[in-house]
Amino acid sequence: MTTQTTQQLIEQLIEQGRTQGIAQATISLYEARFGSMPPALRSAVEAMRDLPTLQRWILLAGTRKREEVDDALSAGSAGRSS
Image 1 (cartoon, rainbow, N blue to C red):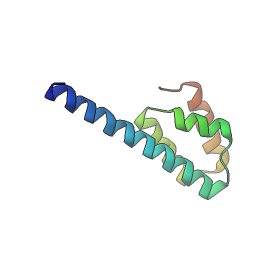
Image 2: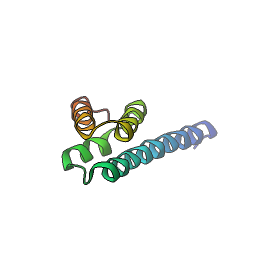
Image 3: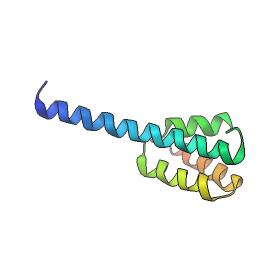
Image 4: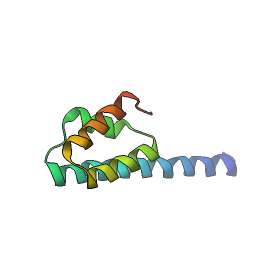
């Protein structure tokens, strides 16, 4: 493996860790505020790989009403980025 390939792999793994961390934080925040997250929404959050989308979702989970959060996550799961 070349140094460039190794660096790219490291960067990819860091990005993957960031998205997984924000997804888990979104689920935790949602559940702290509203109780158990519906399985379909949990699956949508766990499957999302688009960092800006996850960042929007965590802000919604922390600042909006449950219905607004549910609607945003449901709409976002239809255009899921893997």
